[in-house]
Amino acid sequence: MFYVFARYRFPLVPFLLMFASLGIISLVEFVRWRAAPAAMPSRGLESRGEGISDSKRRGWGPGASEKMLASSSHNPRVWLSAAVVLGVVIFTNWPILSKSMMQAVTENNLATAFQEDGKLDDAVAHYKRAIEFQPDYAPAYNNMGVALRASGELDQALASYEKALAVQPDYPDAHYNMANALLEKEKPEEAATHFRTALKSIPGSPGTLNNLGIALASQGKFEEAADQFRAAVAADPGSSRANRNLGNALSSMGRSQEAMGYLRRAVELDPADPDAHYDLGGELLQANQLEAAAAEFQATLKLTPDSAPAHNNLGIALASLGRVDDAIGHFREAIRIDPAFPDPRKNLEVALTQKKGAGH
Image 1 (spheres, helix red, strand yellow):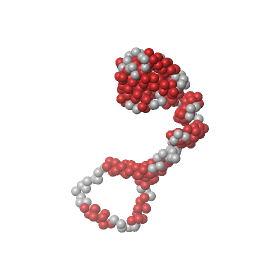
Image 2 (cartoon, rainbow, N blue to C red):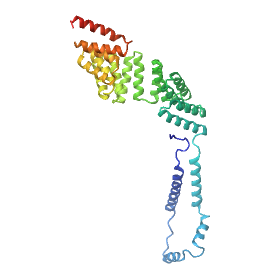
Image 3 (cartoon, rainbow, N blue to C red):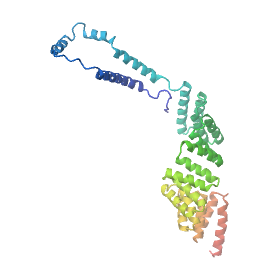
């Protein structure tokens, strides 16, 4: 397994900057050369002999290598180059973070790698080590909360999110994750508060808008919920869930025709979502569009054959269409799947009475 070690993020930078520094020095010298005053005019004197004389005498006196050494000790370019290179090396190797923070980041990255592999216990252990190195490292608390929630430790996850927010009160990820955990704990009012806080930092986030709508709908605030679902759909028109949730909120408000449009759109966007077919089927059933409703419940059962509610509702649609024997079969299947589900038992009794009265 590979993971990112906090310190060594840019190993080639020092070498690249060495070459860059030499280039900068050359550029500075070039600018100086361009800015230097032009040579004095010859005032009518011939200068050709001077040039010939210089070329003829090159290499006379000390040997060429000796001359280079002798001039280097007084060449400011060499010292400037050395100083720049030394500065670059020191700067690029100077720790950006404290030692404890670098260790915490390393442990957090390792924990994330374990978490992505589904090794949640190992992930939690390394998040705890990250916190030991840096007790005020909010991402480690937040990420540990995610791992704990995935492990089914909901209360511990909530405690971890609370610590993340104690360290960094405006941390949007921690607010979002806290809100989802509170929804799971059936605390929609508290969840809505955290979703709203998260939206202050990440306005227009489709997932956050959608989940805030769920929290509001769970409180029976369908008008407010619909507003959030509309915003989610506007932010991400291709979201099947946001379209479906908006349809359900409108249905709860008695706006069936408008709801039907969003529920159909949800099915179009994700034909493999059994919930989308089920919800559309329920709306069609209420609108007494029985054939269409039956088709949606059948689509639901192709995707989730063991759905007791889908068997029950398909039975209702079929019985209403006069297909009592088929309906009885689905009511019985719903009872077999979920013996504690009362609706199919009542519906089965009605269907059997209907069959007996029809003389079957």
